[in-house]
Image (cartoon, rainbow, N blue to C red):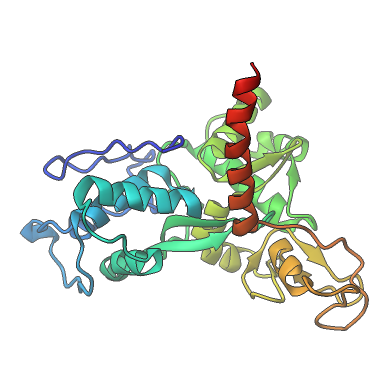
Length: 313
């Protein structure tokens, strides 16, 4: 499965739970105990039962898929499709693999009343489709993860604010580390802060590029509402898709902004691109973004070349 961890617990075993935050706060991007029982199609104990409305039919294929997606947090679309096929192979090898959109809609129909959703987005730099399990009711950074201390979460808040306020959508490690003395909770040395930033990268909350940090697609999907409500004067929105924009291109005349994938699609057939708002010349280079057909062709050509190379040795 190309690096995907497909281990899970059998349906009769307790659902794996992450450790809680200091003070007992539940990580908001994971379902509560009641949510897990319902989402996995098992009868919740009477004390947990509510008025959850089920409009989809969850099978063991859906349950395994949901558990594994929760383990990874976020996956690219190609890995999601491979994960779906794997779950069918394990539980229902003779069934026709359902269209991914319909398959996920079935799961989301069960999760709907729990304010949880498998949400699709795209990476801001190259437009690769991604899927993440997000809590639609999330409003606080302090509940975004289960294994970060108070001062570590405050470091994330500082980094987030720098990223949102910047024109580029990036914050340098230097600028972030210079705020270490202002953190809440236990004091943190800059060396420790560097390690914490790498933890955010490993957990797919941040992306690092040449010493600068920006938000991972997972963080954008999970924290969209929080960012819009917390930084209303600094929030940027793409002129094309109207989604939250962290990094992209802007018109030097009227100031509108566009995601790089939106720029590529909007100007794909234009020899002289012009701003969709003011019609002035668009001064930026039109980027190349993810193309699944080209990706497949590249993968096939690489696989075709491997045997010939091996024969030369």
